[in-house]
Image (cartoon, rainbow, N blue to C red):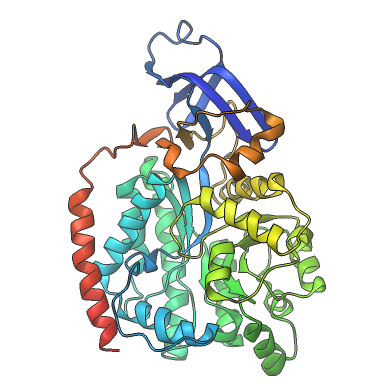
Length: 441
């Protein structure tokens, strides 16, 4: 049993700020919140936080851990004047170059980086066409070793090897779902990882692939995680080859439900947005990635009933992502204010609830003890009414002091419970080999 003493409690939705509070945690759940609780729980280990902010864990709702060793990449890359050439010349060469070792260090380092920046959970979307079978188990290993909660999946596609690649991708998704099911009755650490059914994008998944994914959905009960309309090409391709909008095409195969994650969706029609809302699917907005790839802006953000924030592989700093999402929206003439983007940050916890079947996202009795703890000395009053403003214009990931996942401190006083530098050294070596492999493709 653990008692966090003298906290400043922060809830994102509904916004709440409470000073001088204690939190009692047993196992992976919050069992009590109030003032001066140490006398009621004399057996608890006490950590005095001296007024630090304690908030529900931050969730990155769309990431690519396979890109973890691409930072500052030194490999020959042809000019990328548009989105498709960026995929072909950079990312699709990188994912083909991945092997077991480079994927392990990429996933482990991304998990550590996510925790360091305040994340308690990351929803990953994976690709490694030359290392499919067993790849998701490697990523799961990295999540568990770091102590990060997560979800992952393999992005089904035919872009490299046709039908056999489609089949292998679906098989890996299904096999991983069965692996997760087999761990369900084991310890808390074994239950840190869940899964989606992954697909790259409609323009690289033919109808035969969607049929396989629909069958996998029926077999496993998992939802689809896919990029849609990240670039206008995806929409044009769908109209040309299939005579329908891409979201309508996914719905035709029964792939839209409350567990579906649609990443980007910059170029959807109003009817497609309405269909996603009807199916209770979630949009994941990736502001920095969209800007970096120069693919456009999602002017329909206000129309979604459920939207969350992701990074699309640009780290897992959700404080920074919220700021970029808000400032880009304002720059594009959008009507939303910081509170709407704070709600999107909160919505990552709704996605966890839908997939882990347990409560997330509130500092309240019975909720999962996934917590982000920050040092933040505010020059102005901090209260529920201006919390979103503090997130947009003040607090950042440099304030992250500690991170708790499932009731366990996985990062405390800015230190991991193990020596991390040797892992980073090995990751740098793996990155050099990965870049060399890319140069041969």
